[in-house]
Length: 317
Image 1 (cartoon, rainbow, N blue to C red):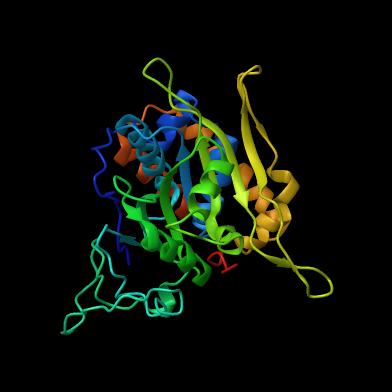
Image 2 (cartoon, helix red, strand yellow):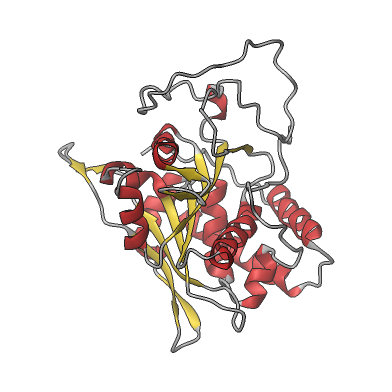
């Protein structure tokens, strides 16, 4: 059953049809190889955060628009929960164990309504949805105008350890800035909790004279155990960077391909083949003159149908 086919970020401007994943490839925001990698990871349930410098409205719009077009790579049947500034998480049964201390006032429940594209926030999340649910949190930050702030932002990131996916933005010119923002109070995440974030795409500074471009894509690696069972916190891995002097992207995901494959439930060789197939498909689709964004989404869905990739959702760290 298709539960949701579109996403509306709270407070986000209308995104024109031209602002699509294929349009982004044509404009050089990212290349087919990086997009193909992100496609496989997002389809496997890996969380996504889009970061970028600046706190002006135009900077926030760039982040939101980039997140929105990347979410076209998430299957349309993924259940999506759009959070608000006042969300008290009544649908999250584990909220208390994740540190949520507020007293909730949950309305008396009648018959469970049929699923629609809108979130049913009064219902706890069924276990079957964990790992196939995408939390849309807007901009994470310490205070407004961010959408999900303070202790709410902390709870959202902690919930990723249960297997939820994430689509969010955050201010930061580098990965280190993102980590510092989320580590500092009033959010106050630990390094272990920050390892849940998955993929962090950092945008280069932009203006009206040049297109939005990805400066770097990082993978925050979840906690691992060595051969003796000791917990290891691995450093973030660089997946790709833009090389200005060469006017192209350089790719480094091969260094953690086995980890990424395991994260989405694939053998390393199969993962690499699937990533390459997605990149090839995106190259071909970007060369077509599809009429609008809806047609592009249909083409992506058709590829999934014709080339079904059997995965399990991303596992909790």
